[in-house]
Length: 317
Figure 1 (cartoon, rainbow, N blue to C red):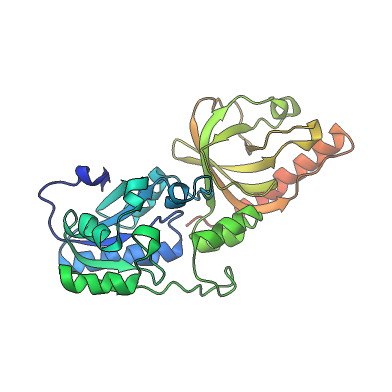
Figure 2: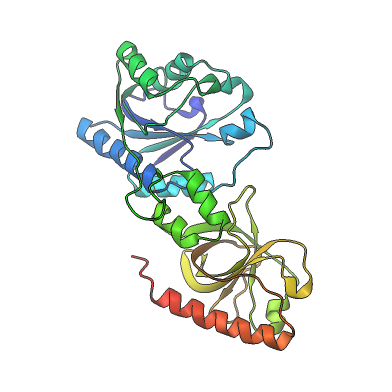
């Protein structure tokens, strides 16, 4: 899969293509429907499929300080899109100047002049151009002028996860923030993931017999509510069952919120400085302060046992 950053990276001889545009944070099941359809139609038409996305999130440019928590960094989104069969991903630097493009100018600059769109696939709520003035109706009308067609994909939730709400990154972020990682996973189609570098912490887990990887998460990461979770710690492609702690470590009057993962039944791991991923499978309990260290140790042992049971019962496919 080709990855381009900015319009200037697109090959000069790029021909017709099937395009879909969006932030696509999380590449959840709704996104997968749109992107998958774009890939399918591109193969039918014998042209490449292209996903256009933005960096930073448009809201941060339009309303500074409003950057939403991210469900997946750009490199992770690209990996997920590649798994869906996408031929190219274009990341457009979203600047103040870019945000002021009129809808028609946006279409000409991106879809017509550079990507030579033959077909555009979008969800029903797609908006584009200055002040999000463009919608799918205008997109289709402009297609009549610029020789491309538009196909709109419905994104309704069919399971119980969204309570009938459409698939959305906003809904997924809310579930993650509430600690409902199982509900988030139902929308994402996989467990929610947090990534970062393993850094040195207070090393209390090591002293207590449960050494943890203290993950310095990437900026704007969507981190689950404080508590203990079952999941996996992935290092260099190896997913290890893990008990995960999110919070300020109230037992020791901590103030800094951290994500720490204990790789169950693994000894001698040296992960400092490595980029790792933490996948959240299930919520186990809230973050508590115990009466004594002995009580904490009993609870930690029970947490690890419960996490092992939950992970063993889960089929990662």
